[in-house]
Length: 487
Ligand code: NAD
Ligand code: 6OD
Image (cartoon, rainbow, N blue to C red; front, side, top):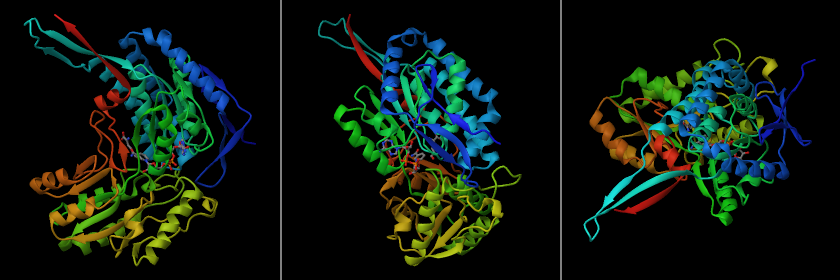
């Protein structure tokens, strides 16, 4: 009989079991992936005190180069246990092996390497100031850790998003409590083993498993001795976290939801644009905050483009993520599938037509308890439809025509969200002009989700607060003290 993996918390340098546990179910077939020990309030308190002690201990005195070397050691550990991380991520999320191997796990390691190198090379400001006596003054800023950071992350890119926040927080010298999603506890648990083996001082990194409201997540956001919360997830959760964090005036950094537009001009290279937009819509079963759920195509190309995208959607091989050639796995859970399917039904009620998908795929009966949906393409909805306005977070887009660049900009900007957009054209003048008018944090031209980790990443409007990436991450995870010396 298979032994179920019990996932423990990691607090003050030790792995900790708790009596309260929950099951993590596989989105592939409903089987049990792991039993997870939920951290209660007392364990969170213990982790916070351990983190506070760590901030005053050897971690504080560690030379920056040694701190950076430890981050590289963690990256080495991820790479050494690469296939275990892949297996953990696939088991929790159901994403295809190839995706975990090419995106999630390599980025887990890369996040540590980038911030290890950056912290050694980033300057702080200095200014020479004129004074009345002519001697002047020298101002220079010194960087301090922000303190104890609560890191709360979602389930769609578990290791990638966790380490995207953890690596810069550690590089800047902070101590952290990490809460992964209850849907994806496995890769975070492996990471705790890697960090333990790398020899990070006790209390610097703490892992606490659990849920959001009335559970571990809320214990973190309302804790008086946690200095800041960095969060990726739904906009409504961000709003709840802000309320919980307000009494203690915690700093917050938020990467939230999106309803991203792809704008396709008639002169775009047809084949590479269909391929690129299909990736933007269907990657990770549509569960990337950057995915395009609104596609606008210039009228002369519209019918041909709709037909090609629908044909691509129908050709996607859906199934067991471990099977050779699978291109799309399930959604994260049956609960999330219910939400996505409710939008498929709503699209019909709102007057839309499915030119591809719209239901549940016929699959091997072994996968009957899985969370599968068909990749779908919808046309004919009014711009005011809820399916055009609300984030669905599944493998689905609505396609609508436009005539002029001004119209495309107005359509793309008519959203409460402002995370990302992509523009597809051979005309660079059009590309730059449109890109600069889009009310989003990230624009890709003739590509999608091409990342340089030094660049600012984040959203406008309801899509977030602040920017992370490169020096922007270090700015959030640091306090700067300006020292003014009269010469
Ligand atoms: P979610 O907001 O439901 O959960 C995210 C995390 O917050 C989980 O760990 C959860 O346990 C925790 N949480 C939930 N309620 C909480 C509360 N009241 N207090 C404290 N913690 C709480 O999001 P999800 O469903 O896991 O992820 C999907 C969402 O994340 C989508 O909206 C997607 O757009 C967004 N997302 C955004 C980005 C970005 O960079 N902008 C990246 C990835 C995902
Ligand atoms: O690439 C990243 O750094 C990042 N934060 C991606 C977010 C993807 C959202 O699902």
